[in-house]
Length: 74
Image (cartoon, rainbow, N blue to C red; front, side, top):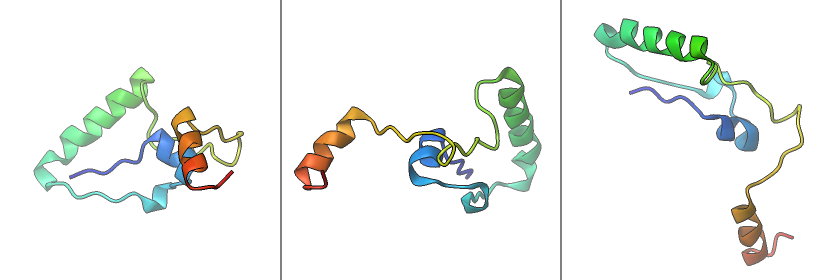
């Protein structure tokens, strides 16, 4: 099992590389590394994901605003 945090988790929750963990059978390791390399080379998603939370203005999805009102946050 491989757990790779997505960009949203990086931006909203400030997840960083040292917080990523995974478990994978040794016999599948080469396949996973090949796949990650191909995805990176294609530019579809960079690994590790860039940590953008502190360098950009955080904009929450519109659905979050309804939750803020429901919980009296804003």
